[in-house]
Image (cartoon, rainbow, N blue to C red; front, side, top):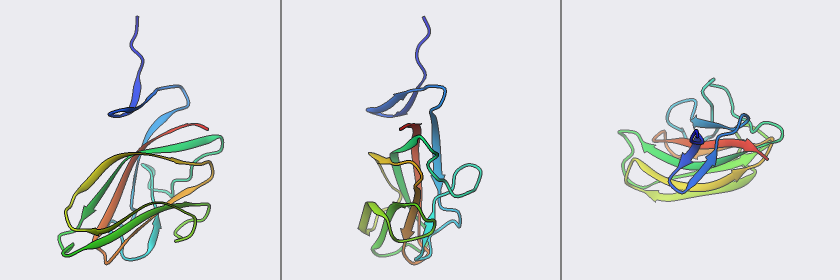
Length: 135
């Protein structure tokens, strides 16, 4: 008997099916500069959750640049428009002082949405790991 291939982290796991895949997302310009930027995938293009899919965020890591002194704020939203502050706020961090900051979570992003990240003062970068599955 063959063991099932599993995608995920810790308690959040999915049986790998033909249409599911693990995806890592990152900020395209390195460290966020006080603007909202749409997260990119491995093709270095804006990641949009495909039709009939949902993206489940399982891990978020926030990295501070060498100039990330003092308290820093950051957040991620999903929206059907790229590089915007609007949409649905998924997570917000205030007064971060220790980097890297990484934690496991379970956040569903629906079909057609982009993930837009904000970090202040050219000192924050956000990386996301998740699984794209059927909606």
